[in-house]
Image (cartoon, rainbow, N blue to C red; front, side):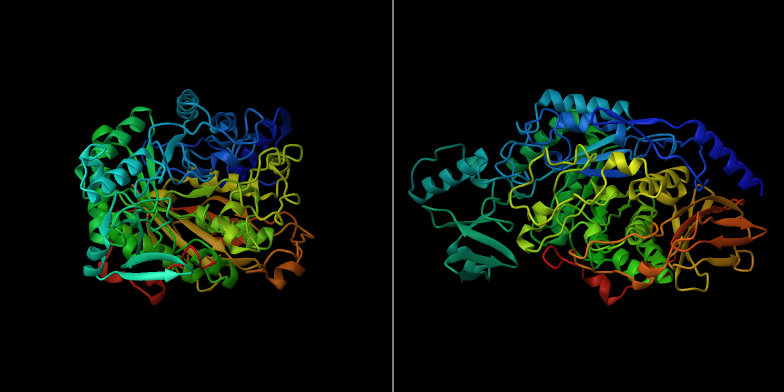
Length: 627
């Protein structure tokens, strides 16, 4: 009861501290608090690499100059919305402490994953001065800034590639090289004869001819007998990491951005450094990570390895801090399956199993990077068909150990699916919606967007801040609760069995302190005697967050249903459901997340390698084109 009194005192404090949100030039009130679900206490910031990141596609985020394209100054204008916060209410910020900017360098494409100059800013996004200003303001707000680093390939319009091709043409003609001979090494290439000797197959598909070598694709260089590797597309030639000249360029690029104050890199498509060659890719990534840390020991590295968990585990041996956790994400990942099946007991085991594997790789340096969707996937609000499902999915991944990554707009339920799979990527990168009056339409949709998809029925940031039950306020509460309990991100995980499939429970032990995360995935309330379950020391209720639907919520029938629940659609939400812990009895409302803390000191947990289990599903992961 004493804890309950402390929470109610926090409620009064929060009610007295209602603030306003500056959104698109107008002040918007923040929702009042009706229930003391998360205490209003100061969040202690740790000086380590554990952060809650927010992925931003700059083009679609915020336009500062009215030209219809999002820009770096627009991102800077919204830092007050993104920045860390001491409380989810009484403050208008989301509460993240890290930003990942998708590519910002000059590029001929809208997505900018084919770069023509690695040490410049695309003019549509602003200037280098704008970037310097953004770095400074991020750091003033306590926000870590990382940028996308696309090193496996460049644009075919990069000067390197033009000089490379011209040199090969000179070689074929037995003429003097047009440029420095070093450029001949910049890209992976073979003659047709060499490819045949290596076992490559010549493919002719609809008058499109290429060689296929162990899955990698090679296209001809006009005017030569050479073929260059271009596994993503013809206009994205793969750089040759066997060349020390290429490594010198990479070091220059890293020096430049680290010198600009960037705190880390997100490395794109690391499987393609040496296509699907795990051992070689690990060596390449280790060299990159080691070099970056000679410039900044606290530099953060996270890689995109869209592959199975066992291979990702091997990639952690590179010394990269994080890799994105694809097994838990996407329409077929563990999070989606758990929301639909409501089998929390199995989910807890998966969280323990994966995080223990990472601890065995490196007890202190391997940091998981969970997410639910990103720029290459359908947005999660397109396959979680009710607000309750979206909130529950958010609770599951946001309360996982490691560094969570929120895709911009995920927190307001921005949609992003497509009736035509070829339009998936641009449709998942549509403009952010800030309010009813600034709904994102001032920013042009990316080329190729499915025009049948619109966001008119989705409330913007301003409206959701005023709605206590909104998805945005759910995210804010999750971030607050997780940041108030640093053991969740950093701790060693042990799954707990509450004897009920719908209950996901696990402890996180860090620096002698243990907390327990409990998700009730059922729609019905559940009660437990934590003492009889062997957890009597977990006697402090740190907070709880309810994820059930708002009353009378209705979903559009036009979107695909991957996980709708008829039970949820017909059941009304009880008024102000509340989790309680009294006399050892824990009561958890339906679709609710609870955090408890132990009053005892916990020794460090020693992980038994024999406890790690694998299953057939660990060997595969949903790929880019398997939506």
